[in-house]
Image 1: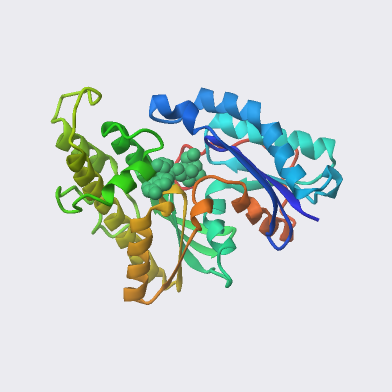
Image 2: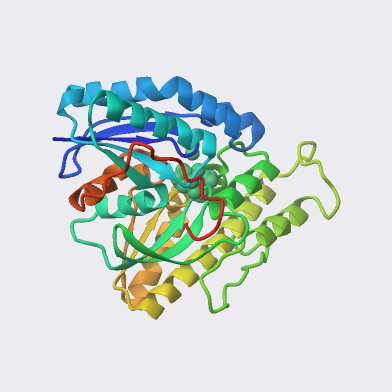
Length: 340
Ligand code: ATP
Ligand code: MG
Ligand code: FE
């Protein structure tokens, strides 16, 4: 029997129905991008309210698409960590309520582990053991993964996440939200070495990242120290393109360098990469190039499974196989501390 997976950790309300071969029988994603655009970032209260309005229609759509009745569902899985508290609550309460009403077992999913599992879904072979790189809107983390569910945190960002940096640079360049795709598109026409932006901690012998200095360097390239207002600035398209390209190159250099060092240190044959920033074309190319040079294999999440979705919640099957179910008093774990 198939499972129902629910995802509401940030600003996408999503549900999917998948069989035990991880085939997608039904899927629905309601994105909130338009709601948050004018704020230049996700506003937690706005996100929670939107999840509340959408969660039941989204679940209903996924189940109808699958053409099954609730009775035919094996278990209900929900991402309970990490994420925005209000957003997580909506998904977890919906999942618990349905689990009680339909008398189904509940499975709790770690959203970051699910981002990485998108790589396994795209691969014909088992990709574990591997090094996992999560590059998303809220996280930039490296893991040593011995299985989909056994991940050792090696390091992560000590300030901004890579996706967050893309979004903030996009705001500075008036490119809208979410900024990653817009910066990436402009970067294609820019000169990647027009600006020499910092590659923080790139040579340091640990797996932490820092992108706030890079963000500040971009800011100073645009307005100079002390100046606040970007909105009135008229920046030539070619300058925007050069800044975007140079910024993107700096982020990618650090991500690729740290990943290949983790591979070398742990002797893993595989690198897997998930999260919204993994959709970045240039990052994908550079990772494949590094893999060819160093002799490891890389699996990057398919583009449609990079940003938030419920299909990557198929990781729930791994938990079901271990009989690892959640109790009905399952609570959210927003996970503001590092090491997730
Ligand atoms: P987290 O998974 O850490 O909770 P999130 O779920 O909000 O955060 P994702 O949905 O995985 O994040 O990814 C969204 C991020 O990916 C945004 O910051 C967005 O700008 C970035 N992004 C999307 N496409 C691209 C791209 N082509 N290049 C760079 N960044 C991108
Ligand atoms: Mg999102
Ligand atoms: Fe995410």
